[in-house]
Image 1 (tube, helix red, strand yellow):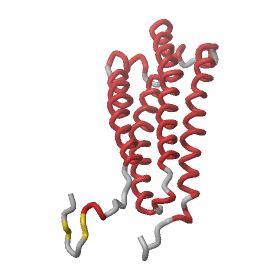
Image 2 (image 1 turned 120 degrees about the horizontal axis):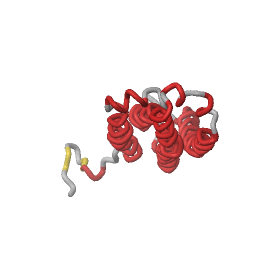
Image 3 (image 1 turned 135 degrees about the vertical axis):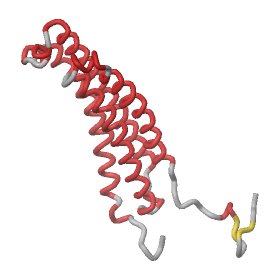
Image 4 (image 1 turned 90 degrees about the vertical axis):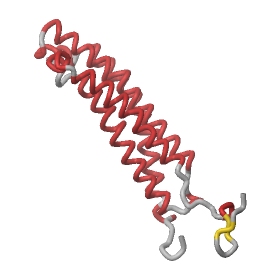
Length: 186
């Protein structure tokens, strides 16, 4: 439809100034991590009988990674990108790079959680049940082969997170400093 809007303008002739697709990806990820990282893992570790035995094990770290980066990190990145889309000229916006960074950040944190933090947390919880809390935090467990192997697995997610997500996002922001919209000519 071509509805006139004062002075011969039409809705079809107005080009949108924002391109929210990439921003919404980060906002939707907040919902996922809020339910899964904060909600599911938070509920698991906050059950009183579990909390008594698992407090300060890697199950707590697992919940913290999902809640802190998953929720707080994605909302911060979404807010930053929302602002950037109003500051950076549209022709210099790189949707593909932002999407790659989004998926790398979220897949990286998920791999860190599922390949290391959750299995190690369960391993520590079993050690608490068998030998006591002191043993689950002892050098024998923390320096043991299971712990070390799973920590190497964590580096897979960490590398994806850093090299596929953090570094490209930093490069995107810093490389666009000279491509900002001028105050007089948006």
